[in-house]
Image 1: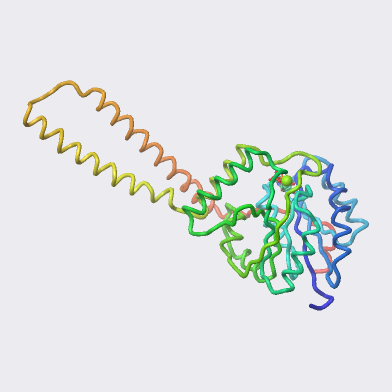
Image 2 (image 1 turned 90 degrees about the vertical axis):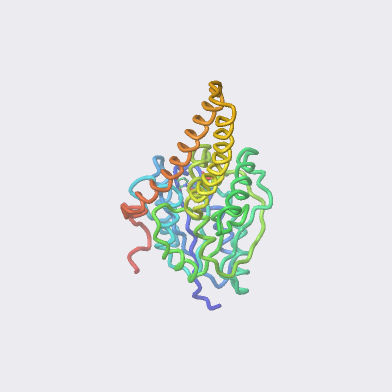
Length: 316
Ligand code: UDP
Ligand code: MG
């Protein structure tokens, strides 16, 4: 590969002020050790309310590789990543977290594998001790269920930290959905994929932005974006319960014909009514999840809005 190879890092920042300096310090040494590659560091300020942007600007003054994209408000990590991928110009692009949970040294190994011919190089966590037990448990459960019902398999223990070559980035950009479940979209595009393993570190500073409720919604996003199984399952549940009801109907009618009208039956009646009532509510709720998503897609709003671009933007 020639000396003109450019690799872009895409880093979303949301209220990461306390960690900004540590981040640039940590990646500095790593980037310097890779030869024949020019780096571009695309930082997305995802509507931070602290001094993240000011610190990014300070850092960019002494480092021309830093390019800053300020979003007009907090759009969420998926949107911030999308914004970063849209402006990244590198021959390869590496999205990574700002909290140093994705070890920078891995970049070297990813680039090696890329040079050996991989289109996409995934960073796989072999040890998630940096995350809480509850988070690990629910994550595992999510991958298990998701990969069972969806036709797009999301590799377990792989986050957004990965290297993608230009062709796969361009492929990703062609996915127009507004509800962006990046893990699934990354998996959907395919390409020749290689893996490097690492141990997940605890956060360098600050706190996680993904708490229980947010993660639950994230998981829902994953299911509904890449599988229609939750919709289809009602056909089978409906068919099955119709069959059972039919059998019971024949039984009860025959019994009434033979033994005459029999008043007791309150319990079975109530149970049946309640059971089917709640089953219907549940299925309507699931329909609602999908219809809600159709609604947001049909509005065709942009995934993110840029307030301002700073850094080497004048050279395009
Ligand atoms: N992030 C973002 N927008 C958000 C939430 C998070 O850009 O609305 C960024 C955050 O600054 C960090 C990355 O996404 O660089 C991962 O977030 P976090 O470390 O909180 O997630 P976790 O590692 O706990 O899953
Ligand atoms: Mg983190």
